[in-house]
Amino acid sequence: MVTMVLPKLRLQMRLLSLALLLFPFVVFSRPVRYEISPLFKEGTLRLQVRVWFAGDADGDTKLLMPNGLGKTKYLFRCVQNLVCNTPGSQLRMEPDSSFVSIRHASGQDLKLYYEIAQDFPGASVPEQHTNRPIIQPDYFHVLGSAFFVVPQWNEGYEVTLEWRNFPDNWLLHNSFGATPTSQQFSFQDLRWLESVFIGGDYRIRQADVSGNPVWLAIRGRDWDFSDDSLLGVIQRTVTLQRNFWQDFETPCYTVLLTPLAQRPAMSFGRLVSTRISYSGLGLHQSFSAFATPHNGQDWKELCGLFHHELMHHWIGSKIRSGCQNMQMAWFTEGFTDYFALKNMLEGGFLTPSQYIEHLNEQFFDALYHSPRREAPNSVIADSFFLDPKVEKLPYLRGCVFAFFLDNAIKSGSNGQQNLHQLMLDLLGYYERPDRDLLHNFDFFLETCSDYLKKDITPFYQKHIMDGRLIAADEFLLPAYLKMEVDEEGSPFFWLDKSVADWEKGIKE
Image (tube, rainbow, N blue to C red; front, side, top):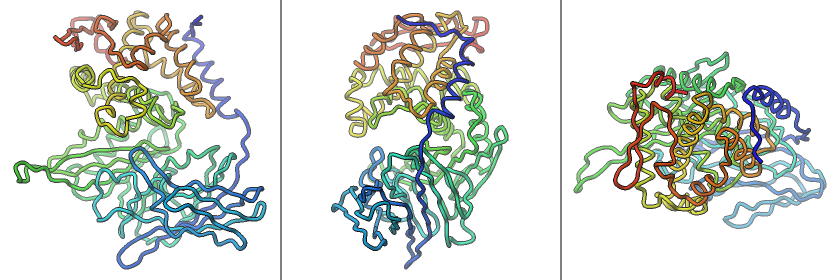
């Protein structure tokens, strides 16, 4: 039996969840200290890392090595010259493997040394290597998950980072803010590795949102827009999204923009243009973006990327999937795309007509005419990183599902409720660190059912898990949205601007 969640209870639920978030349980943290310094040699740069921590009581400490992230594999090959300098200890490594452990006396203080090196040739950054350590004589860009060798503990981590001997004219910055000589932070788990670290010839610009700093760190001189104009876009985007989520607790936020290598596009053996690529990765209090600079480039080209990756601060980070594969990507990517579009509409980055056009062309047409349109969700989980046609499916399917839910909720409540309110309820529940979608999915289904006033489970099973397309006649639409269907059964939508308050309705 589904129980209705009354709207007036939301504030109480949010306050209760916040209290539980702050004091769910006490986790003992163990200290680990890293000292990072540059190693310049014969026109190259490596990053030297020294690590201090106490080994496990049983005399056998396992180390977590950088390994893989999405399509990026074998990151442990970027860790070189790893040694344990503690007398009486024994470092054990398997060849070309991420398995490393140390034998030592019970609880012995241990010291490691290793170097992080770029493992692909050249100074330019190809799109397929953006998650690998990028280390050049004039700058570096390294993800936390590719940077740190970490003792594998069940306890929390009390981390100290110390930065030594970098050139005085270098900028140092990371997901935890402007980099002083020493940084300290504590995490209950390894989420601190979902971070990015930069240094060198990046330029830094700062804006404020609700009294907290928002930074843009950018390098390269070939952009056709100014740093300040891009910072203004970021400030507007962060403001919109924090207002959307009613969440102003993030103490700082950083957006990085690094140029990608220019790749020529050829036709009949002749250069005809430059291939333009964009990529981004949402991280803790930050996201890292890469783009190809080109003539006539406008900051508007980056808007969709920025809105999507910033939205991951909530969808995918605070509302976590809890799984290691892409079985929840319909939510973490598809719902992110939907609300990125809604925020672009709210902020004036898209007109209402452009918003509907984008939904029609980029999502409905793309999904309903995809050759893999009805692949089961299990296929997506298994083949996401292997099949480009499957890789797009969770973005499309999830966005269409979010569109269905949003308009069904609006129609069923006479415009008094919407998917935005449901998402705030999900945030209030899932932001506790001991909850995620995979292990607490019943709450998602129950909350959707409450808003729709009927059990959503069969619909979810059919259209998300089994992958069946939502038939056009299943969409419930508010009066200002009209639908037509093409010969193949694909729905497309248009705005009826004669309906009162249509513009208010489409933005809610």
